[in-house]
Length: 98
Image 1 (cartoon, one colour):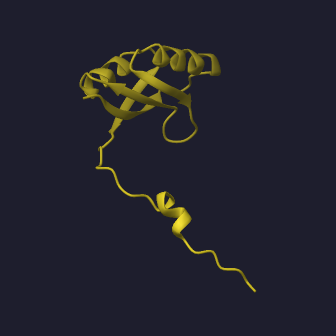
Image 2 (cartoon, rainbow, N blue to C red):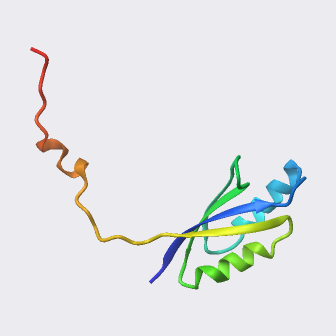
Image 3 (cartoon, helix red, strand yellow):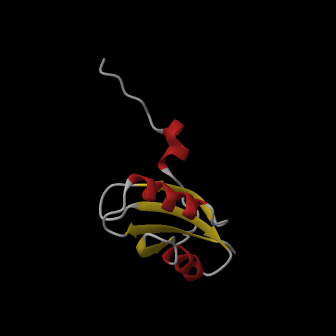
């Protein structure tokens, strides 16, 4: 069964715009990466990974890229299907102010 995780990547200090673009392109080139985008904050790049392999393997691949300082993998815990409120939206009575 495939697993999904979010990779939070911190780049080395002092990287310029072109190096950020290069890092994003390198991460996007990994087959298991389905989404990758630069962000502002404690991390510089966030990527969504879907893989049959252990998430730790993909983490090591990203960690080995040039300009990468650190990678934190947030594994997704798959939950059983739940009934969402909006599935029953039509059953919610609508009141008017009249």
